[in-house]
Length: 299
Image 1 (spheres, rainbow, N blue to C red):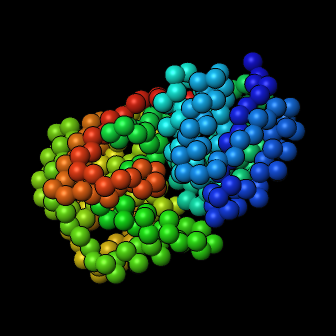
Image 2 (image 1 turned 180 degrees about the horizontal axis):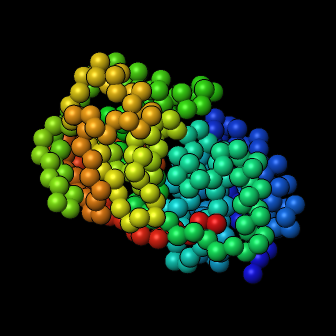
């Protein structure tokens, strides 16, 4: 049966402010297919998550978020922390749009809106996607501990309208402070590591930072996480690895270890930076990851 009403949540600041400018056209495209829109704008960090949770608890069955990976992250946490269930639709209007790439959602936001409107109007059955859980929060695309989390923090401080290149610029800026190699203990299924590392990436999708094909083997409906560990490296070595990371041709490099896992625990000897779906998390020392196979309904 076709859906008559959806709740549209939009982060006006996503994509360096582009999402807010696109809101009237997004609503127009959805309404052209006979869909009633109840529109909500995010006002601050955490607001979209709280609004989604509230409206799902009040009976909303279909949530659409227009934004980037951070907006999707908040929406998914609101959905999965609610007492009721609802399906999620995504219109990519962010900077990296890694989740959209992983789900083969068109990166052209108008095309994506039209396809989503057609699926909603036709009442198509949602897809089942895996969701990761990191301590008490959920993630859809990936998590990182160490160097890439520092890069994410730096990238968020930039306000330059340069799209994916903001992450590349953030890498160069982060390297100026040196490449830390904190001591980490990792236990993941039958894999154990105890020693210094540059970073640990936990991937549910193949892309991070919009342009880095870090986990080409990753699929968000296979019930697995892809763990990629990078041993201590120099600035010069990072520069040499960047083109391979962008092309997805780095998996045979000697500094990198890859394992497909279902459970994962990481402990650090000092508070560590981390990110979930590109959202910086508080410094912490203990990280526990699990997978929720088919935990998300995607419109």
